[in-house]
Image (tube, rainbow, N blue to C red; front, side, top):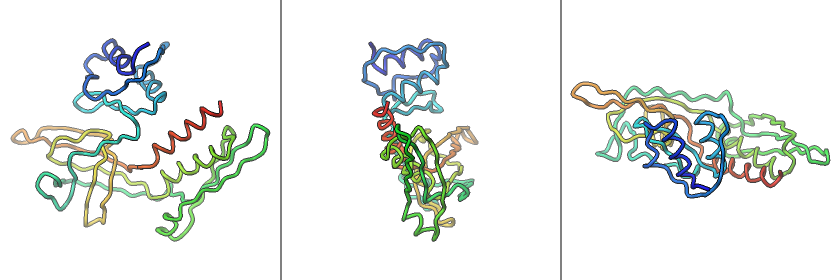
Length: 239
């Protein structure tokens, strides 16, 4: 048996040694596991799923492996009203808000082991108050065999879709941002003041060796990870 961290260190030492697994990897659970003829990312996904972990590799080639609910905050905010080191200015903002997948009331359909239909309706009153109408969708999965499971699935759908989907990109000249951080963005002109999840980082050097950091970001769902973890726990109980 080995700890998660030891298993990860061995995998990357053998198959991708240029990646640093010593700085941001946290895993003390002990287990015996084999990975028969699969890709490195698939092996890491299997290990992460066992313990509710997430992982990514940043632009400094450092592996981050951490508890899913522990989303780290960026070391500074990005704002069109900068303030010393806590609020950094940015440029080239490209921001899109999409309502095509909006859903604030969802019907989840499953089936008990005895063959009886499970029908659960979950809704977001907060979203209804914001948009003034119901946006309905239906989710059917007959593997869902309990009321609690159906409710958890419905709540997860609402956590992701009860508000518009926002994505964007920008550039700044301050280093320190990494993929997976929660970033606060303020733009008074577009009435944006919200947290987003950093999805990609691009770094290049411009005049006078000044770093230009390109940031791609998307919606941050603070409750979604907990809901998905709850679903996994329910599934395990039902096996």
